[in-house]
Image 1 (cartoon, rainbow over the protein chains, first blue to last red):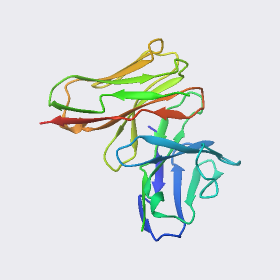
Image 2 (cartoon, each protein chain N blue to C red):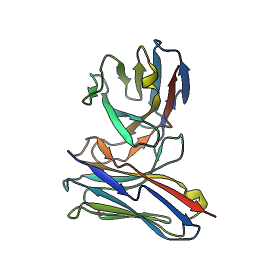
Image 3 (cartoon, rainbow over the protein chains, first blue to last red):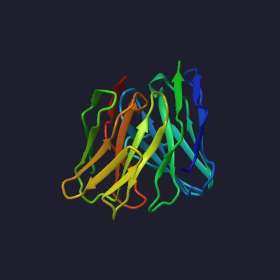
Image 4 (cartoon, rainbow over the protein chains, first blue to last red):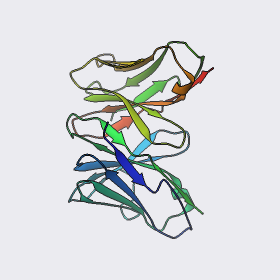
Length: 116
Length: 112
């Protein structure tokens, strides 16, 4: 299957700092990528849809100014958690489709953020 | 709004058993149905994708079926192995290119 890579896999930061997570499609181009958040023992919740060359579409309840998404190329989307607080600690996972209409959704390995 | 439910939430079986995981969804206008596996602390691995015009997909010991009229999908695992222990998630897509809605997952433990 297609490969989606995330970096870093783990990050620990102090409260008030900003953290950037990268999501790359390694062997295909992705005009659209999706960012999910997962709390322990819970399912995935879609945060936003990242569109190459345009603004991201955020789900209801997700703060745009706190979770900045940039999709500058067809293979890279970034999620920046700004002024992180302990409640932002979570597992963040990105995904992308090989074909927007019929393709499978492939996920990155996830990034575990811990805010102290 | 699509809602996806998975039953059971957790399942423990002895090695070698055949088992069925269930997934139900509220909106029959589902486009794609995808099953994933997630190991602790890891991302999701795609297992099977059932596209709009399909009713089932098979890969090795796994078989997934989709019945839109009843709003159900099942994942059948044959001859389960300890390595199958993981959380299994189903996700439905309402329209082409739309987001996936995930079920809560089934945590499977296969005991040797």
